[in-house]
Length: 309
Image (cartoon, rainbow, N blue to C red; front, side, top):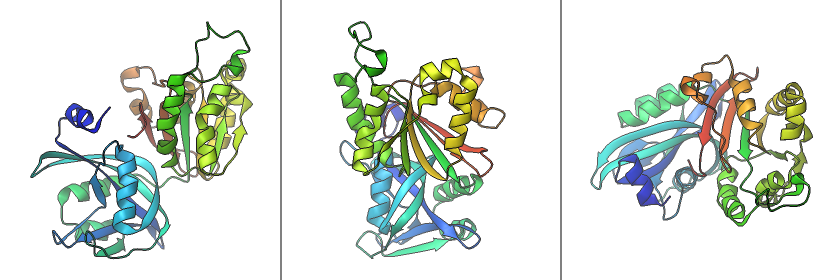
């Protein structure tokens, strides 16, 4: 979907991506706010999409340009809408954990301050930014994040004579991987894993190469093993989710909905992942991102039908 098509679908004229830049502080997270001399205001870092750019990628890029900090995105914090000279504007925000950086004043932003969420709300100029900060503060920081990717499209099973585990990606699937790889990179994976099928490993192999990482094998999390022993599959998923940091795991459509359901069952997120009891989506090339607390309580669960947010 093009930028103009997405804007039209969302009912706005201007699209932008932004983030609540945060880092650990002595008594909780500290939030980075920028001062823009052109407007003499204090705001969250954000900016319009470049041509062909996705919302999440714009958020990461704009934080880097306005603050000098590299981030990895976490939970989506929703949207704000307001009017500007060009018309109706939508900004979609993510939590953005700082991976380091140094601020240098520039024409767009001349000061960066890290403050507690409470102090940030006092300094911010706009109510819509305060709303986003309050959403961030209400969502405890995850200790670990599981990025569950369903493999990209493979060649037709009817036209494949070999072992189904070896069935490769189709041309459409390879095109999906080209879009998925930079999107998945925004989450800052600490480890990458895959179920046994070649099409699963091929979906995340470019990400692993880009990050100079290996792809770990997870035989318990393929469809065949899951069908034989779903309890063991869920136990292994919980072990992976308990590892601090971010794990990208690629699996199959017969596995991912069950994992999402089980990992969020009995929590306030259960209704969000399957509103009204609907089936949990997991189309090919889609992604579920679930953040967990130290006790494996899920903090957020976001579904990306297409790469880019």
